[in-house]
Length: 164
Image (cartoon, rainbow, N blue to C red):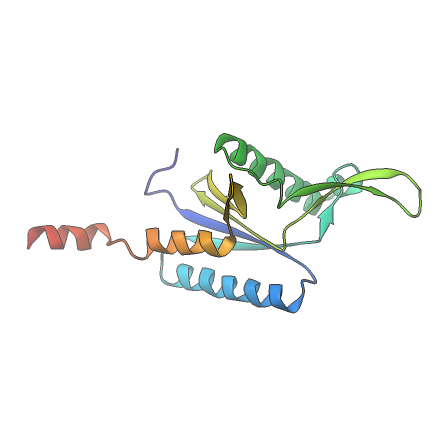
């Protein structure tokens, strides 16, 4: 479990070649992350570009990029399981047939945008995710994070108020 003193790091995953509407949302999220970092509310953020899907059974797992993405997806799914949350509708597994080889293979469709929040080395939140019928989007996640980090008084400000 993380503590309030652990550094907060965010990882934003964006899909390449997204349609214009998705690109606009991605740019808005990037601006918010940069502002949070500039104002000292988060320690760092990292942007990783990924494709539309990944095939865990092919050579993708043998590349550094592919291995990184597959490891993150496994970590995200473990977090979801531990937190009674699901990522299934956002990381859909699909069976596809190769037009070249004629063989079937499994792919994981990646979301247009995903956000992972770490406190120290502990994964605290992954979005998008769902809990029952409630869906938490990347924007919902950032809204809640800003309320926690920006709107709460710092320890020194709280001490000043208590002394008055």
